[in-house]
Length: 85
Image 1: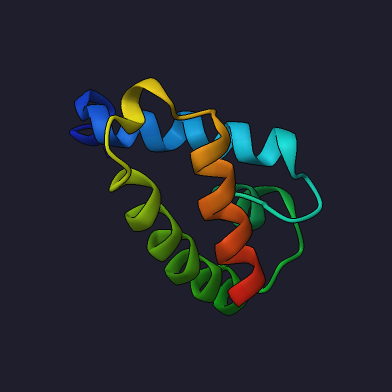
Image 2: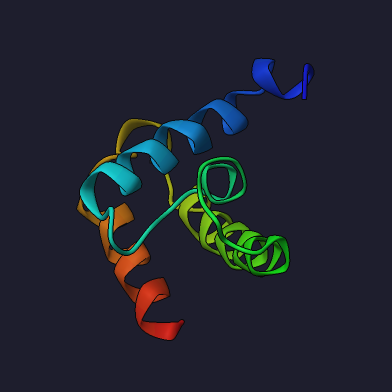
C-alpha cells in the first residue's frame, strides 16, 4: 500500500472512484467503503472488486484520461459497464 500512494495511476483511480461515487451513489460504492463502512459480505465485496478492476482497466485505457478523468468519456464507460452488470 505504501508504494501505491506514489503511483500516479493509483492516485488517479482513487480520484475517479470518489468522483463516480459522488455522481452515482446508488450505483457505485467503492470496494473499500463496502468492506469498511457497510454490512456487505466480504465475498460479495471481492466479486465487486473484480468487476471494478475491469471497469478501471477500461477507464485508465482512455487516451489522455489524466486530463479528462471527470468528463463524459469516463461517464460513458461507467454507464456501459453498469449496463453489463
